[in-house]
Amino acid sequence: MTDACPPRPWWKDAIFYQIYPRSFQDSNGDGIGDIPGIISRLDEIAALGVTALWLSPLYCSPDADNGYDIADYCDIDPRYGNLADFDHLVAEAAKREIKIIMDLIINHTSSEHRWFQASRRGEEPYRDYYIWREAKENGDPPNNWTSFFMGSTWEWDDQRQAYYLHLFDAQQPDLNYDNPAVIEEVKQVLRFWLDRGVAGFRCDVINLLHKTSFDDGRGGPILRGIEHYQTQLGTHRILQELRREVWEPYGAFTVGESFGVNLPEAQALTNPDPGELDVVFYFDHLEVDRIINRYGPKPFSAAKLMERLTTWQHGLDWNALYLENHDQPRIVSHYGDDKKYWARSANLLATMLLTLRGTPFLYQGQEIGMTNFDYTSFDQLDDVESFNVAALMKRFGLPRGLRWRLIRQASRDNARTPVQWDSWPGAGFTTGKPWLAINANATWLNYAAQDSDPHSVLNFYRRLIRLRRSCPTLLEGGFEPLYADRALMIYRRTPVDGSADPAYTIWLNFSGRTVKLPKAWLEASLTDARADAGPSCVVSNSGRHSLKGVLLPWEAVIIREGPPLAEGTEGTDES
Picture 1 (cartoon, rainbow, N blue to C red):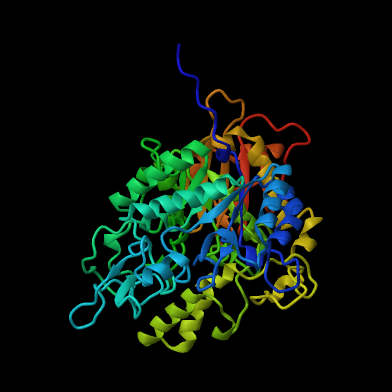
Picture 2: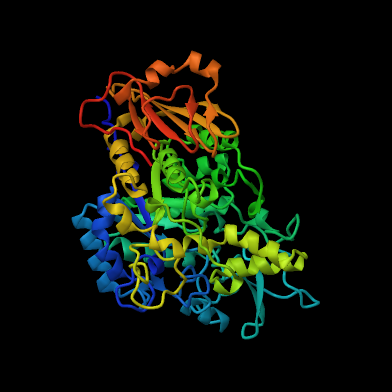
């Protein structure tokens, strides 16, 4: 007698949607999104086809880094509501068969957290909850490490008469995972939220938890010292313990934000034996047009993007898929064309995201093609990282105009402008003054304008999600790269063993010009005759049924191999 196959995890079939609460929906006119606002929009989320929500931090926080500096892990910030509101959200989401995962930030806390305040005073048991070191003889910090937000990772504390470590902002001191009591505190936090009905966690910078040594770092001024804390053996041990003692017993789903993770590291983090995380967010598919980080641009190449996608599609049996989040520019302004071909390029990027193998994560506003902000000066920004990067650029002598151009295209505030629900003042987000300025294009680029338009970006996303969920090949089939060059990308999703669903070929033109399809590839694979098979062209963002040997500017096409689809199933779309 053989063991029965384990049930397919729910998260493999899920469509996740990330909500950045302060920018999603304001219910009381104070200009800040809140939990009642989220509840009021659950029907819109469900109509998209979403089955799980990832909530960015709702915890009590002084907001040095927009909630990623937590002052109380077990309470809701009053600006967003209270624990009763949260429980109501979980219940209302469940009625719509939507699960909720929380953002988990356990590398650091706020400097206002009671643990840190007690640690500053040297009080037990909190004295060693954080990483404290004495100054060098000349008063300098313990080593030369530099933080993610630029500058030293060390901050002097007069009360403790010592330096504390902060990989991010000085108001975000790092926890000390060499202290077993810290891990026990984290377990209690996890159980608190799991007992309230959450289905899991998105784990912030989760591969940075354990610091192996505190020797000086190598390299230049950016992230000097990272070799001493990025994806260390101690972090694996911490995650295995959390998995074994909390996540596994609760059946919790975990997705890890893994800074700088490469494929072997990701394979180790997601290996089911001994078990750490379910999936990870990696970054290099969004960096094919960047030098070192997103503030250094270089030309885009579809071939390079295909290479990186293929590495991850083949390297992991299953992983998270995403193109946007609260830390990235809007994808239609990054890899697309947010002007002449705004809708078509937004739909092309949707096609790519929703035809890869893995669990898709959408970010609020992505489904309507929201663009980068239209701000004109540094004064309009809120993001602490943007200010710190701009200061570093100034130290290096970059002219103000160039600094602004680089910040404008890469600032995290690009993703944080309020969701554009309608064309009225406040964009349907708030009746008050929004905490961050709303993009002026909300007068035409908004949810209300797209909801009933069959050719809108919103309805294109809805159709693609329905298609994905109805096709076993697109949901869990294999991935086969076929061809790519500077502008063109062609890949194939191969059928699942035993499924009647055939293969699908995806054709994408990442450029504003008509591209001739490679003749040798056409002769060896699909032909114009097959592409002309009418209903076999199940998705087109241009309205064409026939390719005729070319792809139009920003055209995306999904070809279903095999017999034509039955009448009434998904067909083409025009944008």
